[in-house]
Length: 361
Image (cartoon, rainbow, N blue to C red; front, side):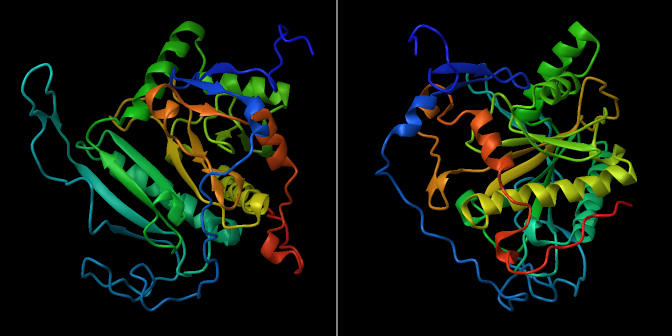
C-alpha cells in the first residue's frame, strides 16, 4: 500500500458533521491495538414482568409519593424530579459579558413504554411499539402548542451504563422555553444548506446514502437507518423518513406503523451484535415548536450506543475527545457492515419460532 495514497480504512482523517458543523477524527488503524482498559460488568438481564419495588410498574408508589394507575399500555406522567420548572423568570439573569446566564423554564415528563418490567424496545411487539410512537407524537403536539415551549426533546437512556436509573422500559420528554444546543446547531446548518440549495439537507443526504449503499443498516418502505458518515460513537445510527417530514406529529398512520417496525428491527440487531441488552441514548430531533414552519428541517432520530468491542468494553470520551475533538476507531462503513450482518431474530428467541412479519396498517 502506498503510504501517500489515502485509504479510509487505514489512514487517520477528519469528517465533518453536516448537521452540526462539528468534526470527528477517524483513526481506523487503532482497531489493531490491544485492550487492557476498563471492562464493564455484564449487566443482569433476568427481570420479572412485574417488580413490586419498581416505582414505574403499574399500581406502585413512585419515588415522589404519587401512585401509578394500573396502566395496561403506554403511560405518561410529569417527572417527580424534573430538571425544568414550569413557572419562573425569563431573560438574562447573569452579570456582564463574562458571566452570562439566562433563566429557563419548561416541563419534564416520563413515558413508560410498557407495563411489563422485563421488556425493551427490541423485545416489545410491533403493535405495542406503535403505541409508543403515537405517544411521542401526541406529546410533541401537546407540549409544542404551549406558548412557553419552543422545543420538545423526546429521548431514551437505555441501560445503567447510559445513566438510566431504572431498568423498566421508559423514556423522557424535556420541553424547553429555548432551543437546546444540539438542535440549535442542527437548525443553523440546515437553514444554511436550505438557503444555498432550496432543499432540506437531510433529504439530499439520504438520497446520496441510498445511492452509495455503504452505510445503510436497515430500511423499509418509509424509513431508512444509516450509520452517518460523521458518526462519533462506534455503532451510532441515524433514523430518517423517506419523505420530507418536519416533526413527529406530521407522520402519517402508515409511517408510524413502519417506524415501529424499523425500531424493532434496529434494536434487535443491536442486541444481537454482542448478545446483550444493548445500551444507548436515543432521541428525536424535529423543527422548533415556536408556531412557525421551518421547511429546512427534516425529522430524524439519533442512536448513540457506547459499546465498542464487546458487551463489556465501551467507548470512552476522555482526554483528546474532551480537550481536542471527538475521535473514533472503526469507520462508519465498517460499523454499518457489522450491523447489516446481524439477524433480526432476537438472540433470546433463537430457539423459538420467529414472530410473523408486520402486515402494515
